[in-house]
Image (cartoon, rainbow, N blue to C red; front, top):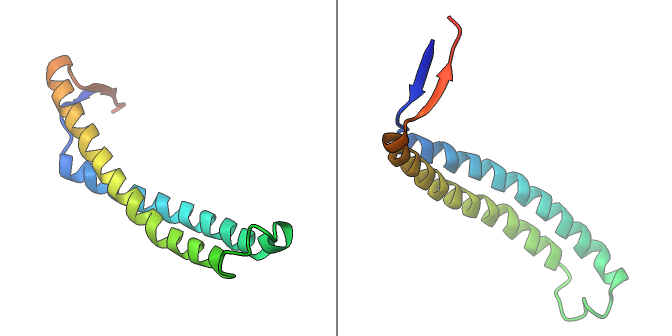
Length: 105
């Protein structure tokens, strides 16, 4: 049985992309935070002259801000991307036809 995707609901696609961006941003924010906490902890012994002007807890500050800001930024950009892609698909599918899928009954 062949079926064709003619149109995506823009709101639902935007919502899914928003939450995918939120989760991806949280994962990347945690990874980034771990890296900066480690760099902040050991950076003073490796590069002492570079770290003289920075506060001692700079790695923790950058790491915490990454955990907060990355999910917000990725969620916003994900929602915008979902909005644009689903809108473009809906316009193009009217002109050239939608994606055809084949299912087994």
